[in-house]
Length: 265
Ligand SMILES: [Zn+2]
Ligand SMILES: [Zn+2]
Image 1 (tube, protein in one colour):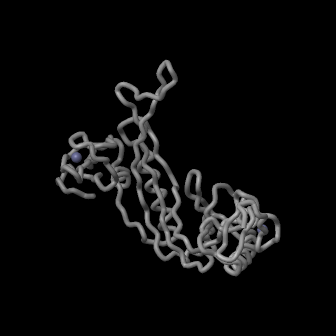
Image 2 (tube, protein in one colour; image 1 turned 30 degrees about the vertical axis):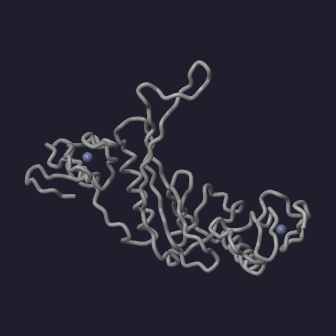
Image 3 (tube, protein in one colour; image 1 turned 90 degrees about the vertical axis):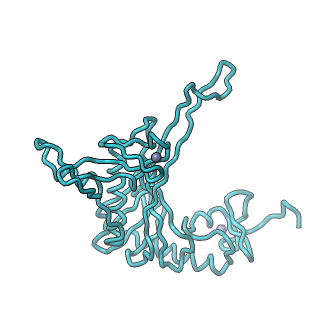
């Protein structure tokens, strides 16, 4: 068997090129047939038989897409599209479902669903006179907090767990902006739409809106660093603890009732 032996697709019979296809345990899949698979379908250890079954499911899914009644969506680039009347959803970047054939999930298919926040920092570089990448002096960073939804679904046609990034708060400043809370609330709302009560969380924002604007502020936002215990008064929320430089996340943020001294959140 030479490296350049011609291979043929076990499903459609077309020639399998060097790129974009897939090796099966008992055959080969061409680029075009591979493109029809769900992105959440495992690419490992599939057989001609499991591919045939999966492609039949994908065809039925494509037909069912026209019955979706989208009532709303969550997310910036990858989006969760909700059909609340029929308790279903799809995950897709655009509403051009006919092109990408996103898998239809029932709310009841979802076994576990959770929110995962990720903090990242990336150094911004410049170039010297010779065109080499160098650090700014002092170094500059771009910070981001991304809001992910992880879920496992009860769907025999899809093996992988689903992980999607819904939102990303990005800034070169050292303070969080309003999107920090807004994205968090939207992510919570998306999760609670699919699985009611999955996220129970009181946020500073909800407390704040209870206080009319013209009355003295009764509630104060505070940040208590879980790493070193430092107490910082809000409402501006630093990305990093000024004492120990640990990343400040939602779990560090609370509200103090200044009349009673009670810590509310
Ligand atoms: Zn093929
Ligand atoms: Zn600290």
